[in-house]
Image (cartoon, rainbow, N blue to C red; front, side):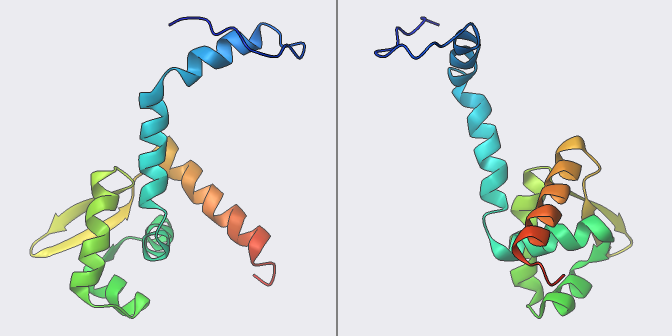
Length: 122
């Protein structure tokens, strides 16, 4: 990593070097972008939010969202692959829920807070 000489000096302090070091970790920002890409779809946000509150099977998710089961499955796959949701099998039935991770909890809080700000009638 090379320290970048800034073209304009505005009184930047030692934090500028630390910030530059973080900016050079493009892979970290790529990982964050991938998580937000998964939640960049209204249906996926709805599914994720639902699964933060209760465990459900595809048929129930489909009914609650007024969608077909294949359409719901299409959205569940990337959420699962990104680690935002997990599943368990019981016989032939597969149940999904939000992953109990720091990232999942933070995203759930963020979704609810943004909904509260943008939808004040809640």
